Length: 432
Ligand code: 3BY
Ligand code: FES
Image 1 (spheres, rainbow, N blue to C red):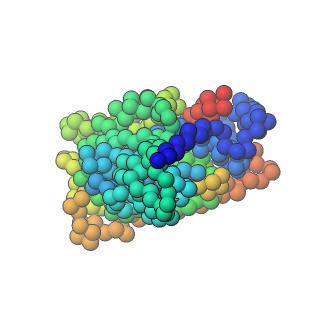
Image 2: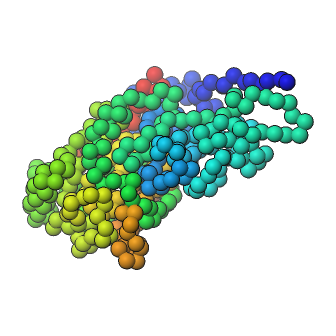
Image 3: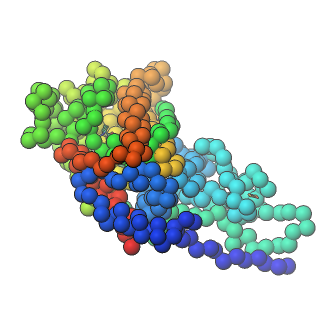
């Protein structure tokens, strides 16, 4: 009996990273102009994209899905971004197991569906079979010698569930301060009881733009005149202050202040946190979270402010809880309301294409057609996503022009700047 054992190969910079190219990237990072958009190669260059995948998506905690997408043991979702393909599986003990979806025989994708339920994982190519925790349990071939199957488990990544949100990290040693960030957001998210929600709808759109342009666009509302449906959420005044509010928004601003005061009063009564916590570039797992009112103390993302699902989430006491909104670096944002939750994940495909996954969650006992109408529930963010897609695609086109030059971020775009600061910092650390 011969045992075959191969030492694991070391992962380094992807092919094409000559010292010269790294020097060029270091120069671009070092000469980054604070307060300005990035130089064009950050949005267009394939090598920089590969480095993004290593330094950002290969090292940091990334939002994968909510437990509503994998409610039962054996449920899984596949997640593809850049060169990676991951399986996120619910385990028997209610935890999560994250495996690289790369067969240890000759590398085929093991599971090819976007989601499903599985027992053992069987590769479709030569039927190598893995247990749900990734152990190779069956790999027979005619006349084959025995080999040490223990050396050929599916590679594992780190997974974590916080208040019903599932995160993964591909690094050997994940950044530890994610736990501190999780401690910040858990009390805001937990009352919405995501374990008692179900997916009402999931939308996947491909935007012809670099993932950073998608993120930058999310981090400001300077462009929100282009989102008429978001007026119900008071986003037109988002990111502004007493000093910067323009005259034509003065009325909305006053209304906003009153609605916010009344929301905060209710939150105090119910014991729900609402304060703004903003540490977008001061910690590795950068975060902004708050609970903010909707226009005229509305209940949901509807034009008239009325609830979009009749069932309250969890044990929430009131529909009028505004929106608990969370932005996490590097690739996600969330809106949690009394009646539903919307999660957003940005999954880079290549330097100029990005998948944006939006998932609407409602109470698990809400019945479509009775408690909510799917078109009405999803209208605001479906429209907003399409409008955003147009905006970021215009920016991508501009970034490919030889006449593109870095432009200044405005005051209300300070969170875009924070995202870029966070990104540049992580990239600098990675290239040394
Ligand atoms: O966080 C968000 O989803 C919003 C939408 C518009 C801009 N951004 C701040
Ligand atoms: Fe998976 Fe051969 S590549 S069994």
